[in-house]
Image (cartoon, rainbow, N blue to C red; front, side, top):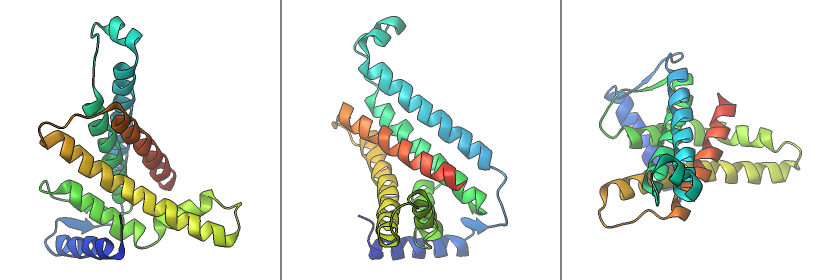
Length: 192
């Protein structure tokens, strides 16, 4: 859950990263389309792997009966979200200049510059403009919180399934990852 404590922790890490030049604020970024394209390709990969893992006919056609790519659906779904977050940050002039903990720092920067400031919330509010003002505010906050939680959950799941032995990625977890990535990418693409 993304509570005030986690938001403050993210802000503190971003402040530290700014002080050590791991995060740099500029006017605008030049790698927006690069990150958007990587997000698109990662999401397409996730969709293809999910289809190949669930459709026997496709498995037979490509010569891999009983193919199971669910672990990589989770990874590719997460990476599509990661790259879309990087595109949004890049567009706003936030550069991540580190290889160490780049995933955590990207999440922290997204929380700091878009969630905590209400920018993600405002975008959500625009999507639900037909609802009453009170409903818009509640729904906007909830959708923004869900987006940040989806990103955090996928980052943690990718790490768990990639680095912990003995845990098997199930189809429903892969489907959840794919759905989260689609929702996340669509929302951030509109913001770009």
